[in-house]
View 1 (spheres, helix red, strand yellow):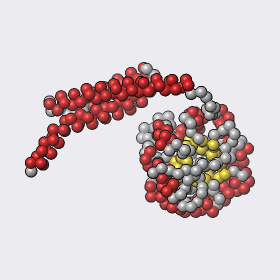
View 2: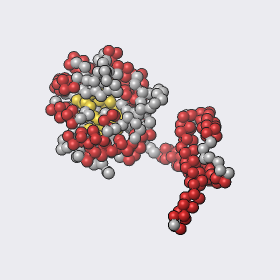
View 3: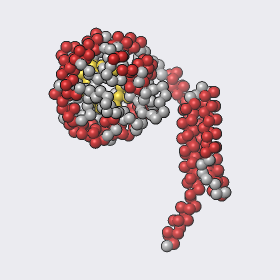
View 4: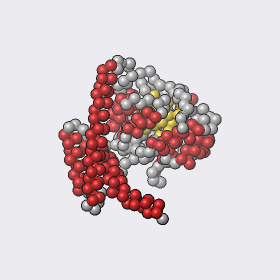
Length: 367
């Protein structure tokens, strides 16, 4: 399905990316207004705050709900800022629209549920409002695109996405792994789709907001959504990933936005070199697969199993070490050779089971 999109037409400050900023949760009228006025003074035009807060476990602060919507409305009246909040049900949509909310976003947990997304899409039918869709919790590009298609199918054309990273059992630096290749592929498939990065959730720590924001800009993303609180250390939710409006202003002032038109002659030459190397890689990979198929024939003739775990571990560990010594990330190399091994196993499986399949087909024909 090809999406029919319109521009978001959201306000942005000159020489800065599009920025949505505000606290993780709307905790009180005083907290909301104090934060909003400070953000407005630093040039932020869009105020975000969570009203309904779906939490992983019960017992955490889950937002004030409808009670907090008038606080956002007062922000709009006093500062002129656009206001944005997360919606997860048709009831949320109805209440937020009545309060004059300008921008909705759909959270990662909701995006993962096609029934919930469709219900929201139905409740927004015929309403011209920007809707930003966060990536699903797990790295599933088709599920992410499916959510956009459901909304677009109900006539919602001012669409964008929020890249907040993906859950991983093995947490390393980030709270949610960036997996930048997924939003890059999304942009390749839907060229006019705005992508906004959420460095607050992605990093999970305030010291990671600046470097993640810069990386997002370097990758050509269209904006940022950042959690900012007037007193982040005492925030009622996700305090470790929130920053003051003053810190946010400083981070934004140091961002390098690489949007100046430049000659592409030199980079074209480098890209041609990459194309040549890629062709060589594919040719060598094809040679490797031919040898793997020969090994498959040998295993079949000698009644051997396809996978030998010791050999697989040896390949992964050695190649990872080689890559690391040559300046390539060890995990990257391990992932690449994991995929190569997966294809080798598939091809050997076909060879080992080919005769059995042929014999069965012949037997079926005879019967």
